[in-house]
Image (cartoon, rainbow, N blue to C red; front, side, top):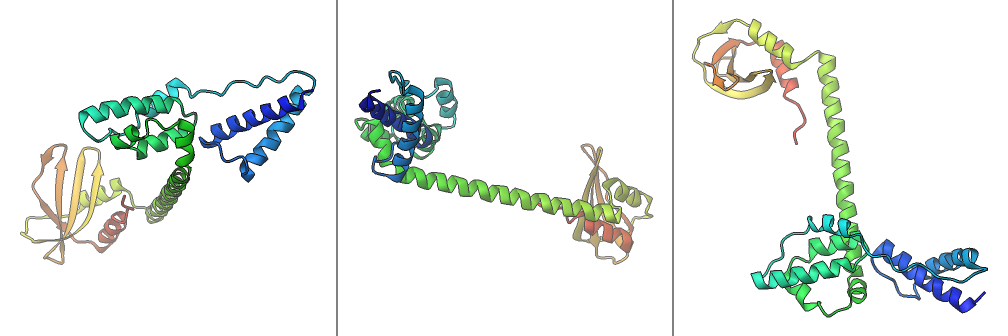
Length: 253
């Protein structure tokens, strides 16, 4: 077995593996490069120990995946001529970058035509290496943002579950509240609006219930479909008021 060929193959395989994983090839004196080199050397030695070594060529990014990612890129700023020139440079550059994550990073952060034009003569591998610190920072921010969104979604889900439990324990439903309002005695007294207690929507009805200047009355503003019905007052019942306030505690956002 040709040991030199094995080493060269391991070096090439290491570069491919790191490029696919990170979008860059770290320095060959880094721990990351050395660890990957040992893995590739061992794998190639086991696979090609009794024969010639012919590692596959460096994979190119999938054209369809690149086109799909391109749809996420914002418009380039600059003059129309600069934007057209920069877009061409960007498309060519993106086809040379195997890492989809790195393509997305460039597409979303390099929005000025000038930066694409000014770096058009820089080899892609060199450019990727130079941008590794910014890419790492970008990935960290993206991960932190995703973590924050997940935490917010979890908190919202917990709040909604707690709200539903309270309604269930109290036996409060939108339909039940509307039935209580419909069953209440109505008055034609002129009253002044105060705080809104709740909004209820059931089927084609939308009701807004308000406190009023009269401590004994509530005011109901109702729509049925597109029609606004005349306002009406109902007798204030503390049990109904309590249920309306509980119903209005639905988590927002």
